[in-house]
Length: 361
Image (cartoon, rainbow, N blue to C red; front, side, top):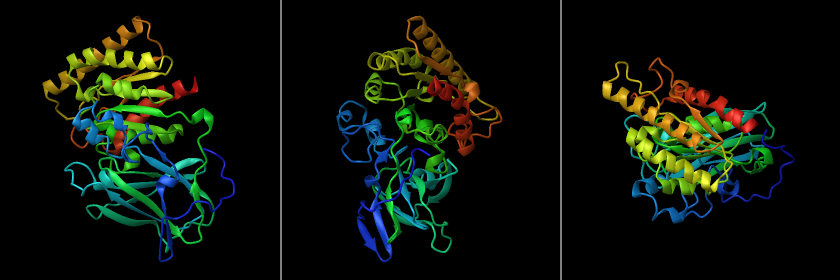
């Protein structure tokens, strides 16, 4: 449990009451997974000042709600969610709509997060779904819930509906020793492509396993390790930075950009651990030579940059090789590149020992 649940009070006012349901804006619970306060809209992942600094693509992707979530406690025995997307849902050919634009609900059971239900986006923009049904209610009692927002869509609003008379309130704050987030930066893989639901992106999995906040700064096709992004990341008071951009970089770009990226982070965050992650090994059964060469050469360049940075005296620098990631059976992706839930689970398993050791130090 992230904090002890004391008696529930009734000081959180509903934003609407429809029939026998009271609706609560999740912003009233406190939005987690966002690294910046000065945003244009509440569900942006980048600060307003980033708009003229980053590329148009990165700015637009920063409006996706990947990694954003809310924790709350309620004694309700049934629960609904309704949410509005910024734009009409455009189906992706290789990713489930539940991951792209759905909502994931987790509940703590014996101290562990367990998936309770996933809300499906049946309509292009405005959706509502009962996640815990009246005809199959939960047993009475107070519980802590975790609600993940869509990975590849932006949202305008999200609210939780519970029966009138039920009590709902923000979850207890994170204890001091686990309040600092893990900050993930990278590509579509960090972003969450192609998880079947929001809670299965590897930053979300690791956040649950390590029981602390996680910030997802994955930018699909645009994790290019620009120094401007390093400067933005350095504003986040993270417990550790996980840098995973190689699938969007060629080997000569790795050599050029990773050193500058790490040095920029280290300049502003002299003691925060930094983890460099090798590129996944692409998973086609009979991999084309150019594909093999790309990941091999990029990983070689990353290793050389890592060693050079260490030789230059940059400490608290860690490294995760590709052998720890997707596995070698070819079953971890939808297209040779983007992980399935199995692939993300394996990636989280491969990263967990390094992150656990860092955080326990």
